[in-house]
Image 1 (cartoon, rainbow, N blue to C red):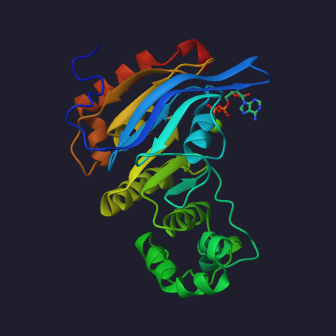
Image 2 (cartoon, rainbow, N blue to C red):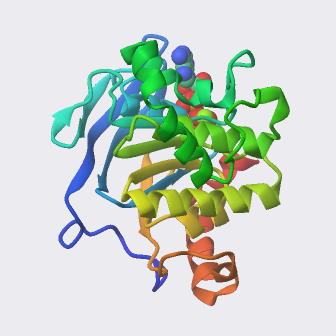
Length: 268
Ligand SMILES: Nc1ncnc2c1ncn2[C@@H]1O[C@H](COP(=O)(O)OP(=O)(O)O)[C@@H](O)[C@H]1O
Ligand SMILES: [Mg+2]
């Protein structure tokens, strides 16, 4: 193990928000083992990421954490209670923004409230949707339709939709991987700012080593088939993180550690 890489020590970290214990998931009558005994802790206010090759079970893990799919074995606790289905305190974001083309930006952002609490409740939150749009630099676009937004703008609107129900934890499945590199760097820093401002806990799936290092307090490295957490690497770089930090020797050392832990065969 490199001098800068340390195993996650639970002792001095804040109170856990997520606790996963021995989470396994099988498909096709047990013939496919997508996840095998994943245990991890996400403390309140921390940013964690999971990195691993395609098909190693990352999306399955996130769906289980979100309560969208039950584990075959093991348990998932959030804030001390078991996750047994979708909940208001979890915000999710996927690779594609999936905004409804016939609804304006504000109407898309307010959709989670409308679905849960009705149109009147959604209308009452209009001011908050506008403030969120301002937070991500989309002030004035509340009445624009998705076809009038660029890819990066649509993802920023999706961030607002994730935040409208004020979740305490954000689950992100490669949210910016469809964007060009410059927009993606910018969006990642936006994400950091939003998380720091709201003291939200975040769990990000990525297959970019540099993205994992620049954003995370801890990077969980997964093996492929079956998906297991090989090691959890704590990243001791100060916050807020900046793109300039990617040229620090510590940054390079973390990236090398993670690259060496990844099951290289799985990427060929
Ligand atoms: N609903 C499903 N039914 C059967 N197999 C599935 C299902 N979802 C995922 N799998 C399998 O589980 C494994 C992990 O998939 P996934 O979690 O999507 O990987 P990743 O997100 O890391 O690319 C893959 O082998 C995939 O084929
Ligand atoms: Mg996936």
